[in-house]
Length: 93
Image (cartoon, rainbow, N blue to C red):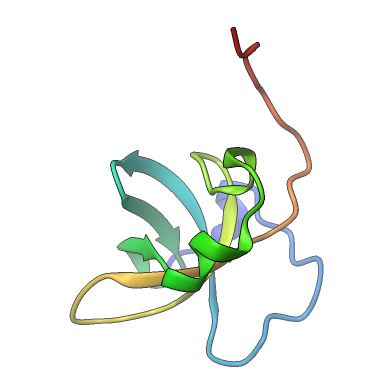
């Protein structure tokens, strides 16, 4: 079992039942590599996620903490991005 605190996770609020917190460590097209208490998992965005975001900034990126539905036999589903505490960004030219 992995400890997310080594990745900077601090539990801010109660996690809804059935969801697992994790940190995005890699992004390849629509697939995310996420570190969780159960180890490294591959995840995709839940379909409703595409309809609920307002700008591209709201999509998860490397370093974000997310909540996901864990799936042992395939891709897990990212449900939400937890609030960011810091951000690095480049100017959009």
